[in-house]
Image (cartoon, rainbow, N blue to C red; front, side, top):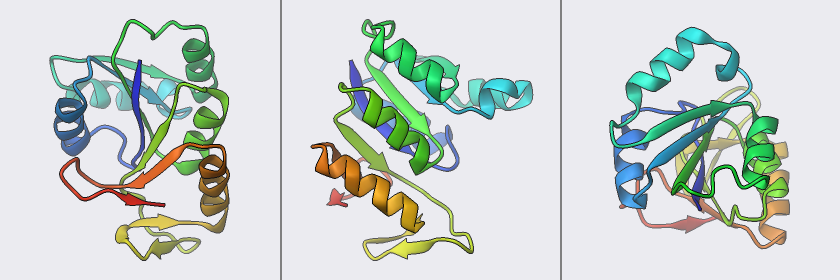
Length: 154
């Protein structure tokens, strides 16, 4: 069961690993990231950051879509983490069971602008278009850094 899809440019770190996994009651974290899946050092770092109570799976975005649609993760209470809106868009659009996209930290670049509800969340115009499309498909888009923050809808 997919509990939540989160966008956080840092992927797996203390806030995600402990606050969100405890809040969601998950037993498996899926990192869907095309770069991390091919980077042994990054995979090792991600494995060190995960809570002992959770399984960690690292797959490419497309392999994640394929596994989710094939039901390979159905036995888990699953928390999916990506590092950019474009990857969340691909996943949420392709996997019907993803109902909620949580936007956490998105760093500022010269192509982004901060969201009025949270200065730690920075979007490109394309990010906003993709999130609007997901919202129009019936997906819930929330802006929330940690579980006890008030939910702000996109």
